[in-house]
Length: 192
Image (cartoon, rainbow, N blue to C red; front, side, top):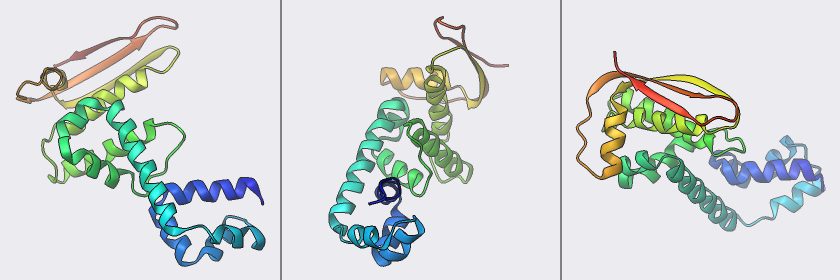
């Protein structure tokens, strides 16, 4: 079996709903597109569709769990809607090895829904970007970057963390995250 091509196809089958559907409708065509030989294609075509679907759904569940851990305040703000929105966000999205890509896909999805006035509260996309800034700042090495928010995300984050009622104020806020090599992270939000 051509291991690299087989692994690439299996990985995509488990993470891409559309490709998985296409594969089970026309396994030979899909496998050939991935460069598998006819022998390898026939062996792969024998995988059980139901088991593959169950395993793929369990992987999505794990990804949602990681996203909840990465964006805990966003998950709290969205409540029961988090998992459904997350699944919609990652549907068909390219994914690299890092969990950050799922958070980025969710944020882009939230931004789109907020822009179309299809999602409340409107500040939730800002909150997710605020939490992502800490993920980005947590990478090793020197850090310097800026973010802009439409809402006072610090008060929203503070209220959510304490379980208090949120009275989000639409107020342009700018954030800066800084760390010298081997230094500790410093960040600050500014409002003009």
